[in-house]
Image (cartoon, rainbow, N blue to C red; front, top):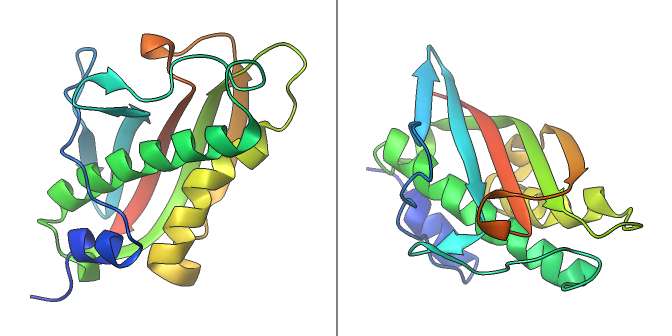
Length: 155
């Protein structure tokens, strides 16, 4: 087998987490043809929110980016599960949607979500570049600072 997603993540000095238990009635991922829809992931590990609170008051931009990266790692755990760990089955990231729990007046939402986008580009190169939406919101599940979802093309 080719390189695994877990190995690719380790090459970035990071660890692929276990897929978080859904906080609602939904699947971690769903596939339609060659499109893989990854359910939104908050910045959590083992059921604990790593960054609870608002970016712009409790957290600065750089910490918000770390929260987005934590979400991306959870998405990669879902992706790995869907492709049986096989990095070569990932064609590209098609789309990402990011949601940031923001304090009033915080306007750098796209820069926060770069924390997830940068990881995908580091792992997949140009195939990690994607269309994206970044939205500031009043709250997220578990009072998480960030939530990210993605769509991938897979083999």
